[in-house]
Image (cartoon, rainbow, N blue to C red; front, side, top):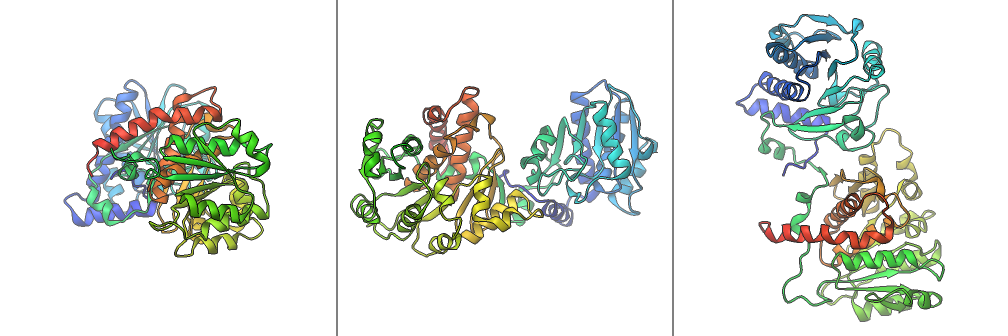
Length: 508
C-alpha cells in the first residue's frame, strides 16, 4: 500500500532503517533525491536560470546534488547557502562533490524569469523562518518566481500543514518515499502546488516496519471492504437505514440523507418522522419508506420490528432533549437477531444536542455492545463537543481528530476542504480530493446518508466513513459549478458504478 503518510519523525526513521539494512548508504538516498528534483527542473524549465537555496541539513544536501546535476547538464545555476553542513555528514559530502561555488544566502538576488529550488529546510522545520531565509521568501514572492520545493516548501510544517510564518509557495513540490500530512492538510496542500512523489530506494518493507497509522484517503484504503451485493441478495440483506426527520418546516435535510443512503446501496431506507411532519415527508417520498417516531417507544418498536442496520440522527432534527434521548436509545439498543445495529451517524443538531454533556454520549459509545458511532462535525460543531481540543493551538487538525476519536470512542469525520477521518484505535486518513462545489447547504446531510448506507451493508465504520468522504467529494468534483445538495445523490451513481467494477475486479 503506498497511501501511507509519514510524519517527519517517521520519515527520518525510514531513512535510518533503509541505511541500516542496506544496500544504499545515506549519500545514495541523497543523490537519488537530488536526481529526482533535477529531473523535474530539466523537464519543466529546460531553459531557465536556476537558483538553488541550500540549508545546512539534509534538505540542503539534496540541494547540493541538484546544483551539481544541473551544472553538469549545462544549466545556468547559482547556489546560495545559509550555512555549512555538519562535518562528516552526508550533506557535507554532497557539498564537497558540488562544482558550483556557493554564495551566502544573505546576498540572494535574482531577476524575473529565473526559477528557485527551495532546499533550505523541508518537512522537518518546526519554527518560523527568520533572517536570510525569510528574506529569500520575500524576494521569490515579489518577483513571482516559480519555486520547486524539495520535500516541502520551507516554512510549512510537515506535521500540520500550517505556515509557520513566512513560507515559500511552490509551483511544484518533490517529496520522497511517501507523502507527509503537511502535503494534504491546509494550507500546506495549496502551498505545495503540484506534488511529485519520487522513489529514492526506500522499499515498501521499510515503510511497513514503521506500522504507519496515518493514510491518504484513496480507494486502496477501503476498496476491499466496499459492498457489492451478491446475486441472490434481497433488500433487507443489503441493509436497512433509519433517518430521523425534523418537524414540518425542517424535513428536507433528512430526505437528503435518506436518498443518499439508498443511492449508496442500502436495500431499504425509512424516514422516521414526527407525526406533524408525516404529511410533508409523504408528499416528497417515493422509494423511501415513512414511519412515525415521536417517542423512544416508537423508536424501540421500529428497531424491534424492522431490525434496521444503521441510523442517521441530526440533519434538520432540532437541538434538545429529544435528540439526546433518541441518540442514546439507538446506542443502547440490542435487538438484532444477527447481532446489533451496525452504526449511528450523528451530524448537525445531533452533535450540538450533546454540547452541554458530551461525556454522556461518549460513555454510551464506549459500551461493548454499542453500535459504531460516527460523528461528522464541521469546525464549529467540533468545538461544541471538544472545546479544549479545538482550542489547543499546538495540535494539528489531524492530531485534533485523532485525540477526539479516542476520547469519544467514535469515528470522527472532521469536515472541511481537508477532511480528516479518525478512529478510536489511532488510525486516521486525510482526504485530498475535496472540491469547493461541496460548500453548499445540505451537502453534509448527503455525506451522513452515504456513511450510514455503507455501514448498513456491513462496511466497518472507519472504512465506511473514509469511503463516503471520498465518494462524496468525487461526485462533487465531477459535477462542478452549479452543484446543489439535491444534485448529489444522483451524481453519486457513476462514481459508485466505477467502484463496484473495481471491487469486482479486485483480488479478495
